[in-house]
Image (cartoon, rainbow, N blue to C red; front, side, top):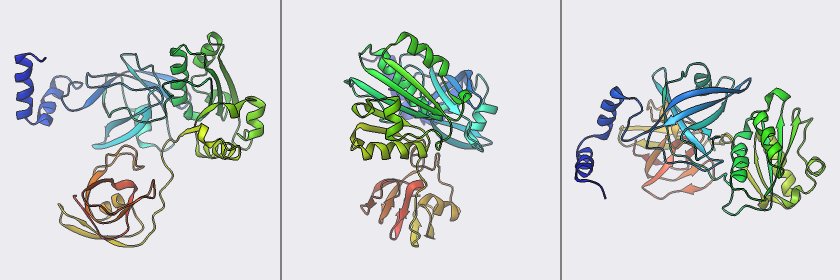
Length: 352
């Protein structure tokens, strides 16, 4: 039970704008907040020529995570807030968080993190998300297939299996362009030495030189079709893995994690979009509702623009829309939608 003082404190907070409280607290300690999960950068550890692990100390609002999950990270770059999702690669039991991030060519946020974020800086985090996690009861055999930076969630799954001290046999098949592109190789090799149930095969070369078809899998992991499989990596690799499992009628045994989403296909038919609070009416055709709003001169909040972070979530007052990530059409009023992956399929009114 809360003490009278703490009850009085909570009551007082409800009477005060919590964001104003945050504004004041940030001047005392940037990590303090009553509304946001914030974290201070403690260390940056190089993992490969283009990949580093960022070690963060979160504040008390952090709620934890499961191995294989990711977290939205929000930073302000030149006055503009950007949000991206990154995999948590450290152990859930640790008091610090680890995000292993590859620098993307031309990537605004990843370049900022690698080049400009300094130890001691404070970033904002969302809650851990994602269902690319192991079942509560582990299977007898696992096959993990990673490509490039796709190793990050699988690295967490490897640690999860070993931490549970199970008898699960784990085969990790890890693709990369060259030897120096393997992230966590030293740590993985050390785990394989002390964990006889963990077998790791490293495969170098581009996709054309390192296929992931049934013949290749059978050569490297002869009993691959008997294993519950998890795969993460570039889209060509995941398509090849998916086709291999489908041809063997084993799709139900494959779990796939994609970084980002395929570019949505917008139908292109023009429809009227009414932005109720802004008093703006526009015609949207061949664009998402986020793009249409920006073309109309509005500036709705957004983050990943891929339907992951939900920063662009908006209440649809009425009208039919299509979710481009699922294909589902929704014409019910009063629904929250993601502007970046939604197109109008008729006249739409938004609470924007």
